[in-house]
Length: 318
Length: 253
Image (cartoon, rainbow over all chains, first blue to last red; front, side, top):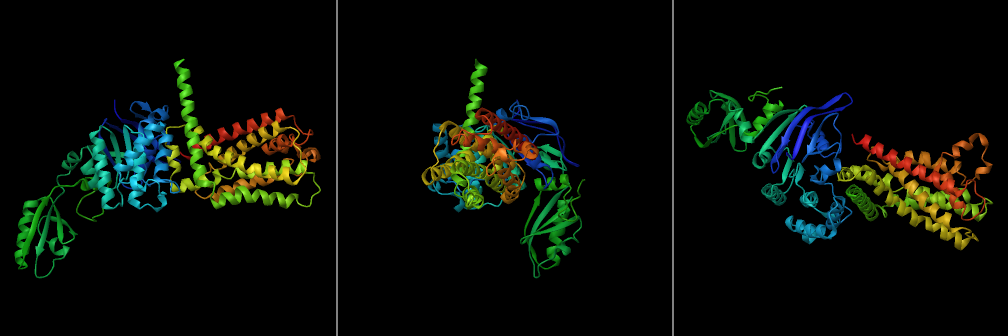
């Protein structure tokens, strides 16, 4: 049995086809990333999988429960952490947790025990009885995650869990996701942070224009675009180089300035390394560091979604 | 037997969740300024505007005041709380919880219902203290206050289904219905004095039956038999509940 099975999900809003025959399955205990540009269909998919919205065609099963026909049974197994930290700011952290527990039919003794544990886990025990309108963004996010876990779910939907958070909150939330994975909790992670998906997910699906563009492990996806490689170089030159100068090196298709380094996109890294050395010598300087980089998951994302943020270099696919 | 136990368990879960929603609303919204204005002060001033100086008997005036107070107080919580929750995205919590939409609608209505029960006591106490208004039959008063409060709380939840994040949008629509109801429901003009040509409209108003039922506590002269009043209010409750359920489902697509 799968934790999630999306079976030919389609959704239409008037003239707009938001999803077209979306098929995928998520194994029990897997951390599954769901990536896509804005408007690609991520939110629509999550709303269908959580039973808020009904598909126009197809269906989905959560641990075997049909989300349309057996909505309540399916929802009992899940926790949901929405994109916005949707907590009740007029209630205390404890009241927020207890309310959510009651909505998920968690018994009094169990919810009080679990509530205390979660407040500890997320570093909120000292603020337990404070109204949450005074909480920082990170604290609100941590409480939202605690509320998503109050019913001890087998499946957790995490929508942009770490977006715009402080370092402490980020670390706590990433640790918790790792722990959940070890406890065999299935995590469905939606994020714009592709590196986060790369590090946390067993597999990722990339959705674009309402269709699944690819599903595989991050490493396998990267292998599909080995042609997108790059050389990262830092220079010590009498005059700082301009990206246009570096574009003249043979084999370089694009140059991206990243802080004090330059990333040179190429299909032939060894030739570009030679070119970089020659460039530095010609400018009477030296190369401080040089690294070859394989394609990142972001490169895969850009290629599959057709985004062209680099204006040239990486060829995009429609 | 197992099916029956399962059904009972489900029902208890639904009612528990509905009660949790109601408790949450009580903690958050009862003391919001716009609730106090629309739920307490507005009905009081409405009544004073229409009743002061009129040579009406207190046995007519007090039931009317109670009915108006219930109409405005019971239907004031959800039109404020639900748009705010949509804006704060907390309403998604209710929609994605393992409960039916009926439980959500019931929970939201319960908070308006309880609020209204508390507020309805005020004109009753005022009537009993300031005016010689003997209660001749307590049963229709209790049943009338309870059913009418629940009916208008459910009506408030129904109007709040309109997918907006602004309480003002819903309040405007609601007042388009609530204000005419006062004039066609026998609150100020006895039903017997309403022209036959427009009387059928009065039968479409739940306030007609609520006011008539409460009136039965103060006077033996009522327009309908109390059983008819009770049955009609129950019908309106069911209509509002199922319509609300349908609209929340439709608008969340």
